[in-house]
Length: 138
Image (cartoon, rainbow, N blue to C red; front, side, top):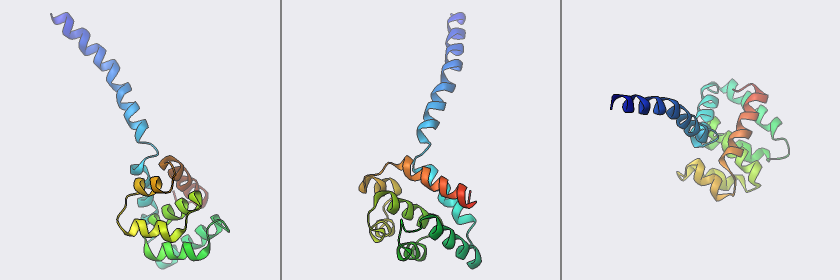
């Protein structure tokens, strides 16, 4: 009987770590990771000078892909991190930026917004991370 329990303990100790790594891998590229990226962006954009620099970086990165008025509107109505996510979604989906901004202001979560415009969350997270890496925001 004791041997049986010992075998079960050994099996579970070998099996459980792989289950947890599968679960954590499933969360990568999800809404929680996007929220972390938004928080990182917000934390580094506090002063008017930092926000101005961020605005210039966003305009340069999305040059001609997303109109300046959409970028300015997003930055005026949302936090810098949320604005970045909305601009990325606008760029990837080719949907009007004002619609994306409105959905977020109406309280929709990022998963609902990406689904509504036909995107996968992992693609949005990937693009946000790429912007942060390129612009030194990460």
